[in-house]
Length: 179
Image 1 (cartoon, rainbow, N blue to C red):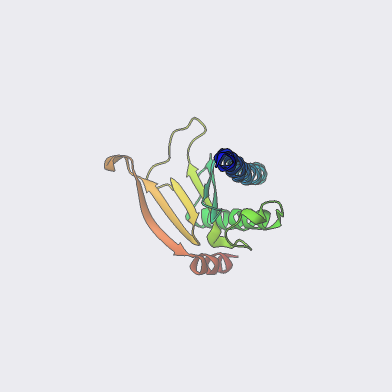
Image 2: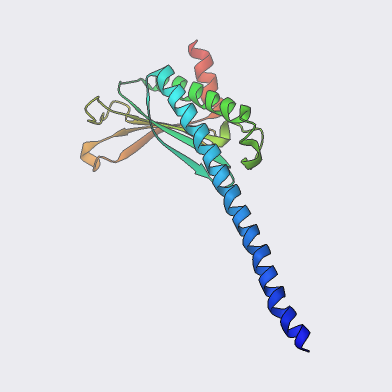
């Protein structure tokens, strides 16, 4: 009887050690996946920023990376056609960078990543931070394989007013037609 009383605390102590080390291992894996994803987002954001004269301003992730997002400030006016082409090029390059990163692959919910798994957002404004307003483009985004374009109307509380959306197929057809 005395022996079993001694074994019970020993059992719980060993159980605690095992669970604690598993929890620590899960925490470490989560930290590793976050670090790897943030490194990739930062690297791609800087490269796209330098290549296309856009300023990286943020990044986002969803789940066991179902989607990765990059946001940029653009200090010049672009037409809807120019924004469409830039969004598409940046989304493709971002997708290719993610797929090429072997260290990131175990943390992707889907592999290979497609254009539906990456997001790119552009916020258009002057160098001094003043926002562009209607009729100029204020915002353009690539999300879940779709593009959307918006202006800001100071008469409507300055909120974004989406004026057009395009599927991946529609956007690609319009890009090809313009070349």
